[in-house]
Length: 225
Image (cartoon, rainbow, N blue to C red):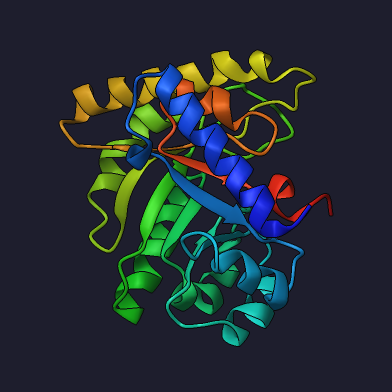
């Protein structure tokens, strides 16, 4: 199938999930995960959807982003090392993978120096998966007030990557847990955290039913890597 056809199918599934959850489809943004795909495939996708793309490797992103239109919006969704922030930050609209207070502080310091204000999603390891990065629910509860005081960061919400599961329905408890945690953090902090970046190619309809505001979809659009 073509990228255009795949995008149309994904958008139809987003709309259907929103109908089931009695949500407005405008509340859910599709982030096209473009890692490992080149400028030609990305340009083709941009013809058929909003030009918002997710990358997870700094060097790969730095090679391809300058080849594409400047109005494309780039989100970093992989683990970000502090020593690479300065290289990639000028190209980014958002970072979905801030997984520690130390990283948030480094990101804030460099953003201040570069006069930037990126959007930030705080990555939470709600599944307590030892193989994944992210705040524990206890750590983010304790450290969120410090991060909300970092002036160069626009903290817009939370992100999670659940266990890989055979059946998408098995991911539902993790998505529900992130939404519940977000609601608790908002009540306790008095700050708005509207964004929930959760759900990928295999499980994004379930994530939408549980409140996702951004779904990260790659292989369903471009094919398997």
